[in-house]
Image (cartoon, rainbow, N blue to C red; front, top):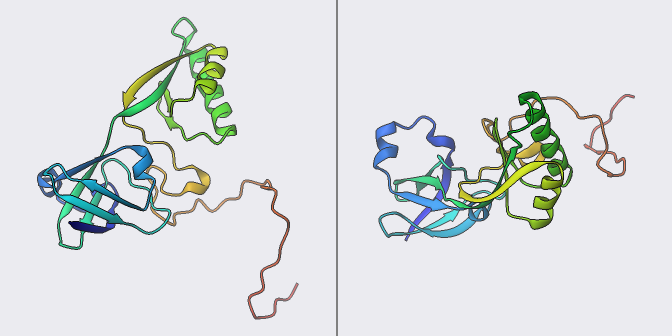
Length: 188
């Protein structure tokens, strides 16, 4: 069994030919959210993955095994709801309809994949009815699912671990005010 404990986001810095030759592992979103899991490679070998907690694996990432081998990750097709605007609406209204749907889904903390012309979420009949009530088309399809990392999920598309935008969002999350004691005095 191969063991992987290192992830190279989107194969950055690796020669494309090395990635092309590497065995693949096809994983759905449920597995790619976990930091420890077992899988079977495209060549039939077993793989045990042990990543730092909180690390999310994305389609296009590469895993480096303790044995020095690369493994290319493919986001497996899985059941998702594909949400599109009603084509009978004017173009500007379609964009607003999708933006409004993203707002309502985000307000419910639903993992969501954002695309310019559609949204994707995991199947949920209650949310599907809500979206249809907002005059959106909802279809269950089998596609790869790559939801946004979110403000607190880290690992969002195009961001490095630990990357920060250096701004606050100006509202509370219900946590009581607290102090941090650092063992040295502060002048206030």
